[in-house]
Image (cartoon, rainbow, N blue to C red; front, side, top):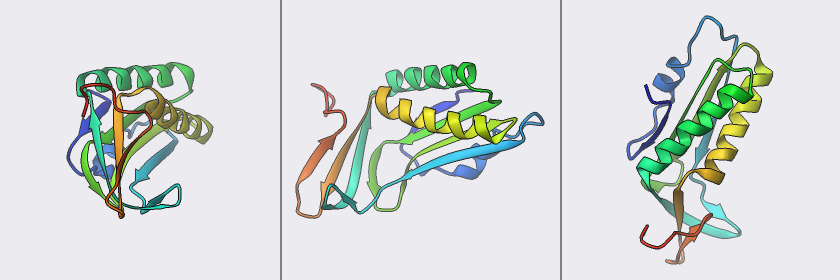
Length: 144
């Protein structure tokens, strides 16, 4: 089963968390990234995410494999949205199960940081002024 996914559907945390239940786990940590109504002093009306899904899934799986090797954890999952998202919607979810909280917390933070840095997902903010802006990283040629 794939542990990393790109989806255009609403993220439901409960079934994802259930996939991490394991008798070896005494801890669970998660991160939810939501669309907020502002960025850099500008009011935001929503976001649009695009991704190179095949490459994103492959790189995301690598990140989770690396987390399993690097941290003392039992398992991990990550799901990232694409498409149009409204204020308050969940854009990304990371969950980690571990024997102890230290590993779960550390791996969870590492996974979201690596996902943002390495996975080809591009965010376009839509401002209430009517202006749109692509953010970190800039959209490569042909992605838009």
